[in-house]
Each structure stands twice: as structure tokens, then as C-alpha cells.
Image 1 (cartoon, rainbow, N blue to C red):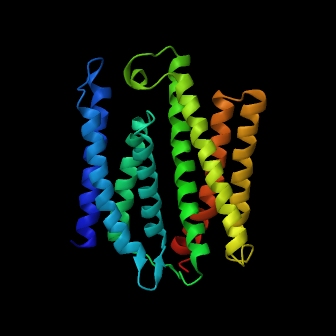
Image 2: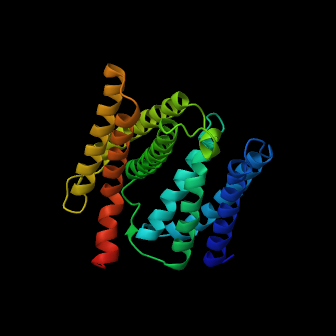
Length: 269
């Protein structure tokens, strides 16, 4: 199957899965109980199709092609995979309403707008481990950011005493906050391992072409660390937790995609 066909197929199944997941919200107080299982099954099918696309566009005989749209597709796949996996044990299915359409868009962009930025894997296992940890950390922090946005919506609806509609399908506010901090703790742990592996295995960690990534990643790590400390020491929650969560996410995304967007799509280097 061609890359274009793979991208379109994955996108269509992603959108169908998200639409099926949205049905319980639109159906009101008596939703179809089959909707979520069917949506999750379709999500896994789309994820497999997307994985084949990622393998063909990113992984090559000479290394990794991490051009902007290829990298976006890889990270979107990682985010959706994280939500689907965590949904097995935690009530995070509603996040798929955001992550699946984003994954669909990234698959189409990667399939029809090829980009090239080759990264050699000759640096050894340490570099590969660092890359895997970075993808996992970015994915989990991104999921936490989506959870924070959903928590923002839920908090506003509850403050306005709007208890019907979409907000009624969400878990209790306290459960949502607990899930947010669990995601942040996991992302902080993986980001810590990413930074440590970078120090251990990347010689030019503060070289001209990666210094901004290192600095912004450390800033993101600091923001998330302060948030977890504030939760432990002062019981931070609500809007404070949401703002710090989104701040850490923005710093981390700027560390990678901000520079790639400027260099590859604006400066065309």
C-alpha cells in the first residue's frame, strides 16, 4: 500500500473512531454502551495503519527521517498510543476526542507533504535510548496537557452550574485532577530520564544546533518539578495546576517543534 493510501486510511479510521466516541455525548443520558468499545477498537486499527506509515516515512536504511511533518506524525502516533494504552486502566477515553483527530491530520500531512531531516543512528545504543525516552516523555506530557484542557472545560462548566451535556460524561473533578497529576508525574519521570541520557550519551548537548532544545527541556522539567512539589507541599490544584501543566507542555513543545518549524518551514534550511 502506498504512503498516500496508508495516510488516508489511517486518517479515515481515526475520524470514524473519534465520531463513534462522540456519540455517547450527543445521545444524552442513555448512550449506546457499545460506542466506547467500538471506538477503542477502531482507534487501535488506525494506530496500526499509522504505525506502518511512520515506519515507511521515518525509518530508513541510513537513519531516521525526522522532517517536520514526519516528526509531527511520529509524536502524534505516540500520543494516541499513550492514551489508548492508559485507557485500559484509567478513564481517559475522552482525551481521544482530541488526540485522534490530531493524529489523523498528522498522518495526512506526513503522507502528502514529505519532508527530510536525516538523523544518523551511528551514534550507538545510547542515542537511540535517548530518542525513545524523549518520544515517550513528550507524548506523556502532551497527554497531560490535553487532560489539563479538558479539566479547564469541566471546571468552567461546573462553576456555571452547567451539569448536563458533555460535562456529565466526564469522571468527577477530583478524579480528573488525580489523573492529571499521575500523567504529570509520569511525564516528569520520563523527562528526567531523557535529560540524564542526553548528558550521558550526547557529547554536543549544548552545541549550537541543540542548545535551545536542551535549555527549553530543562525549563519544562523545572516547571513540572515545581508543580509536583507545590502539589505535595501546598496541595496545588485547579487553575494553578492547569497553568503550570500547560506551561511545561509549551516549553517542551517549543524545545523541539518550535525550532523545527522556524528552520524547516520558514527558513527552509
